[in-house]
Structure formats: structure tokens, C-alpha cells
Image (tube, rainbow, N blue to C red; front, side, top):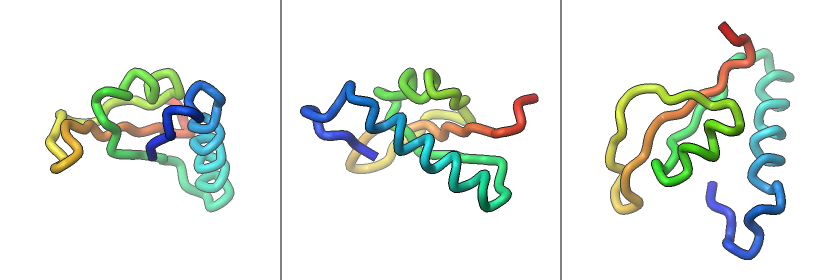
Length: 74
């Protein structure tokens, strides 16, 4: 997911993540994950996501990391 620059800082990304979380909860799933650009890793951290694994290259976009959020916090 990428937000156009003129629409950043308006809560759109957070709304989309919340919508996805609600969908997976309704379906009985516990886990939401994504391949995040390393440049926005901190953003996903703020939304409660954790890092899984090592950084990898995703040509032609660049370095990414798998991030996940589990509704059952351990």
C-alpha cells in the first residue's frame, strides 16, 4: 500500500489497516501480515506490527521486511 503524498498524515493508512484487522477478526483469523518497505517500518511499528525475519530485496522497489500483527498478544 502506498499513499499519495498529498493524502499522507490524514489517517488513511491507519484506517485501511484497521479495516483489514476487522475483516480478519470477522473471518476468525488471528494474524495480519505484510511486506513493508524498510523506509516505513517505524510506521508499522506504531500500528502494533512486529518484524519477522530478515530484510530482503523486492525488485524493483527495494528493501522490504515482513511485518505481522497478531490479535492475541503473547
